[in-house]
Amino acid sequence: MSQDLFQAPDYYQLDELLTEEHLLVRNAAREWVKREVSPIIEEAAQQAKFPKSIISGLAEIGAFGPYIPEEYGGAGLDQISYGLIMQEIERGDSGIRSTASVQSSLVMYPIWKYGNEAQRQKYLPKLASGEFLGCFGLTEPDHGSNPGGMTTNIKDMGDYYLLNGAKMWISNAPFADVAVVWAKNEEGRIKGLIVERGMEGFSTPETHNKWSLRASATGELIFDNVKIPKENILPNKDGLGAPLGCLDSARYGIAWGAIGAAMDCYDTALRYAKQRIQFDKPIAGMQLQQKKLAEMITEITKAQLLTWRLGVLKNENRATTAQISMAKRNNVDMAIHIAREARQILGAMGITGEYSIMRHMMNLESVITYEGTHDIHLLITGMDITGISAFK
Image 1 (cartoon, one colour):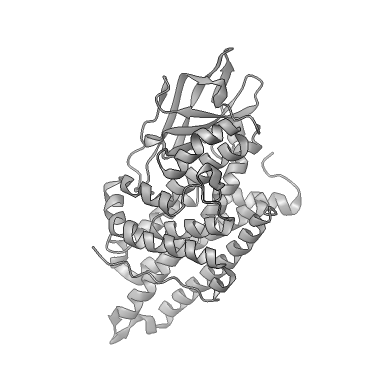
Image 2 (spheres, rainbow, N blue to C red):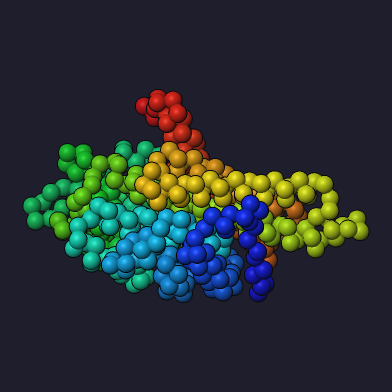
């Protein structure tokens, strides 16, 4: 088991832009990842198993609903704190960050924002503590980038709703206690509802044989005449804007998280380049390797500035969907390129489980697709700057 020697790059002294609380939150998450995630993550990824032993630790560092008010079990932190926690967790592994960001942004957020007080009191404290884990059902087998075309539906049966349909590529699905699911009613209006494990007709088969996010559990949600109590409908927002609002929060967390993966690849490559001797000197002294490393730290620094500013706007409730899309697209693309360059610096060693780079690279192939693909986010920016939609 190799020791976690990670040292975070901060080329522009961006820590000076953070508050004392931000630094405390970030450092606590960083130390927890070094202590609890790094020693086990390579084996978990090789075995394609989600390490459930870390759930309580994720709760302890505030990774489940950091910005949810304390009265509901959350930490009551700001959006920059949320981003920093996601950055540190994804520095450990994108799959572990997926578990945390799904719980926070796609399960707790809609219950907090779109639910009623009874729903908040019933679910949020247990989700915040990790007693409950949740998942988010939007993507369907035939509807990914076009979620508005969903066919999952609910019918009003008087005392309850009858839910039918299927969702796929759902993080946390195989073990989730609750699922926030989006379905169309008889008028074609998209509604959010809370489905609980154990409801008759509800099953969550696991997706196997993944090359990416191997330490994260992925599955399907199958609904076969599931009876949903009417009190499980989220009453305060419906329509496609409701799930898309959740995705804004998740994409914001991903924009921060991808920086963590990039930082880990850069730090690994820098350390290796200083130690690897070829032609009688460290390869860090060779021009092509310095070019790679210099470009990496430049792109990481640009991404850090982008997300910090986005975090300020988010705290002020001024961040737009298009701004969040830009940051998610840019930062994941940045991270995946850094992972590939870092792998080259390590040569053949870069493909082994002794180093984290290949695992990050494979994970990022999923991150660049989920919560809106690389191309879809480009079109969101295009629509925002031209005023013309390419989706219709």
